[in-house]
Length: 66
Image 1 (spheres, rainbow, N blue to C red):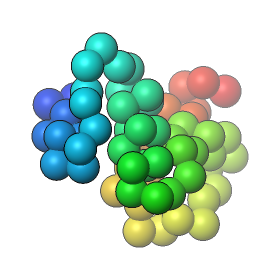
Image 2 (tube, rainbow, N blue to C red):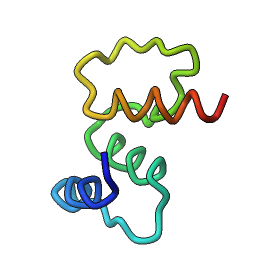
Image 3 (cartoon, rainbow, N blue to C red):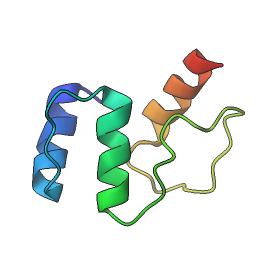
Image 4 (cartoon, rainbow, N blue to C red):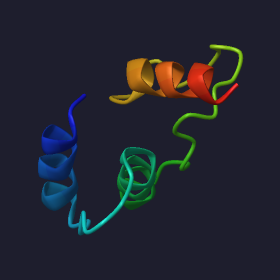
C-alpha cells in the first residue's frame, strides 16, 4: 500500500501521520484500532491475523528486515 493511502487511513482513525515511517504509521494505526502493533514482525511469513489490512505489506517488510 502506498503512503498516501496509509495517511488517509491514519487520518480517518484519528492518527496524525506527521513524519513517521511507513512501519511506524501502520503500527500507530494498529494501536488506535485496538490491535497489536505487530507490523513487519512476521519473520517466518506466519501470522494468525488473516483479515489484517496490512498483511501483504507486513510480510514484504518482514522479509526485508530478516
